[in-house]
Structure formats: structure tokens, C-alpha cells
Image 1: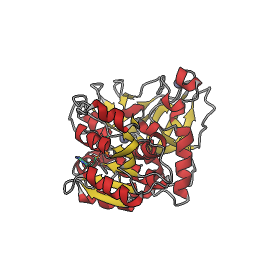
Image 2: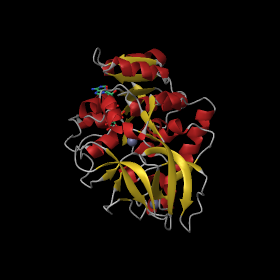
Image 3: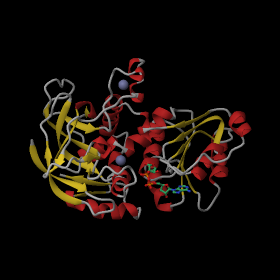
Length: 366
Ligand code: APR
Ligand code: ZN
Ligand code: ZN
């Protein structure tokens, strides 16, 4: 066991605290990772607000990169000294999804077995099974993916959550390629990552939609060929018009990614598709929201697919090293997601800035 500094939230809506926590030595299947960087994500704020569950105290932080310090006795996948990006959950390799080769849908994923605690022994719940606003954290070894150690940690660590969700929504769930058109509704961190993913895949046009002009500037920077301010014009009509300019007869985009998580924008995405187009829901709705009323004949008549994208349908062992290499080659601008680097004691202030929409990502650097 060792003691390190970490950011925890003890009660619903209480300010975060920088405290000392106990990190157990890694047991079978586990690894202790020395954290180098960790992005500040909306999900951390949702934990603090009690919006995820009531299992306080939480150890926050989950978009992280670092170096493996120690591994449990049976661990072979990673070794001390490896530079890794952390992911939410390790795949089991044995459930029905894993056996049929769909590891990204593993039905039996896991985190570390042992618990990190406060100094008095109170068990902590690590955010998304990671808890990386900490000098060191304990995870399942399968949550560590080795990537190019030359890469900038603050940038590639973001692949651990929102950036991967967005890129994956475009390239995995939406399966975008050259010759296909894409529209992304909502250009926060997840949406602009979807824009970057669509551009990386060669989709054209790549249409970014938001109600905030600032967000649209960032979307352009990350590869949007067209932007639509949906506070000013009807996004469905705009997407149809832009797609028809590129592909004669097109009645919308081949893939429309919804990155807001609301019924009204989901409905826009539904109608902004070309015939046989794909809708990808990557924005996370709240439990009170329902699928908007749509004539069933429209679902049938338009064909295509209505999908959702959980963590960008990513397989970290496949996707993280590939995306890090593309970043290193200058083909994926992960640096554009890092608005500022902050310290471990700046998490509360970063939540404030995120709330005002001023930053794409504040990244804690240890
Ligand atoms: N039409 C278009 N864009 C909208 C609309 C709307 N009606 N309402 C909000 N937006 C935009 C916001 O202006 C913002 O740019 O959607 C974006 C949402 O971005 P963020 O709040 O930064 O959220 P992000 O981190 O990108 O996550 C997107 O996925 O992880 C979930 O909880 C998260 O539901 C959220 C979604
Ligand atoms: Zn499995
Ligand atoms: Zn996140």
C-alpha cells in the first residue's frame, strides 16, 4: 500500500478536496499507474452533482495517460515502465460477445478488484472505474493500453473518454469513409471529435451544427467543411441543401451524429439523413427523456439505421495505438482539444470554466 494525493468529492455538490488516499499494491489482474495527465470531463462534474450514482466519496478523473509503476503477479499485457492510456473497463475475453470476436461489446467488463480508500479506510468509488486526478491509481491491467511513449500525454490521454467517443461514433459506429457525407449536431468536446473523425475518414462534406458560433469555429479548425448555426437557420434544411450541392439528388447526409443527447436534436438527426442513412446517437440523454414521436412509416420509409454509440464502440487495444500514431503523423490534431494545462488543485475552477463553455478540455498535469 502507498499514499498519494488525489481529488475526491465526499458529498453531493460539495466542493472537491485534495486529500491523501491509500492505493493498494496491485493484486492479480491489476496495475498501479503513475498518472501524468488527466482531462476534466463533464462526467466528473456529473459524479460530483450526484447525477451518476450515490456511491460517494468519488475519486474523480478518468481521461488519463501515465506510466505503469507495478503490476499484479499474473499480468502479462503491460509491464512497469509502459506508457499507457487508460480506458473505462477491461474486456473479459470469455463472454459471448468476446467469444464471437466483438470485444468492443464485452458483456462482462471489469475494473480493479481491490478498492482505494481515504486515509480512514473509507472505500472510494473511482470515476468510470479509473480515478485519475491522483498521483497514482489502481486499475485492472486490461484498462491500460500501451501507446507510443513519444506522444504528448495531455493530448493522447483524452482518447480515454470523450474524444474517443466522438471519433468512434464517426469511424466505428457510423463507419464513415470517402464518398460519404457526414453531419454532426452539437459541437462540444464529443461533437468536434466526431467532426475530426469524419474528416479523418475522408467523409465529405463534413457539416457541423451548433447553436453557439464559438463552437462552430472550433469545428472548422478540426475539419468541418461547412458549419450551420441552428439558432439562425433550420439545420435539417441546411444539411439537405449542403449535401445536395455535393451529391446531386442527395436528400440529406449519409451519417448524422447526434452529440447533444436531446430528443429534439435526435429528431433533427433523424430527418437530416439521406435515404438509407445512419443516425448515430453519442450524446447522453437523461433518464426522463423519450424518443420523440415520429410516424412509424417514416422509420420504415427512409430505411437505414438508428444506432447508438457507447464509448464510440471502441476497442482500446485496436483504436488507441492507431489514433496515437495518426496524431504523431500530424493527421489527427489531438492538441486542439487541450485548451489549458492546470494543476491537481485546479479541478474545481476547471469545472467552472467548463460550465461556461469556455474550454474544450482543461487537462490536469501532474
Ligand atoms: N442544437 C445544436 N447544438 C446544441 C443544442 C441544440 N439544440 N443544444 C446544445 N447544443 C450544443 C452546445 O452548444 C454544445 O456545444 O451541444 C454541445 C454540447 O457539448 P458539451 O456540453 O460540451 O458536451 P460534450 O462533452 O460534447 O458531450 C456531449 O455527450 O457525454 C455526453 O453528457 C454529454 O450529453 C453530452 C454529450
Ligand atoms: Zn467479454
Ligand atoms: Zn469523460
